[in-house]
Length: 86
Image (cartoon, rainbow, N blue to C red):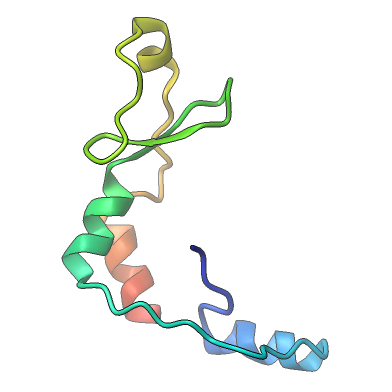
């Protein structure tokens, strides 16, 4: 799941564009769980698959392992900032 809007500025822009939500879903997840999920995420640019080092590990194939990408903003520091914005 991915949320939008994430900030007040985004919510204002959506309202100005005439976009209104009919329903909202709030998942109350502890910060440490959110951080763990983010930091362990990896993607395979060839297949487009997204893995998690703990919860959905990539294949043991060395070729796949070598090409996995860890987004530069998938760090604990970046996630803490995202949580604070939220």
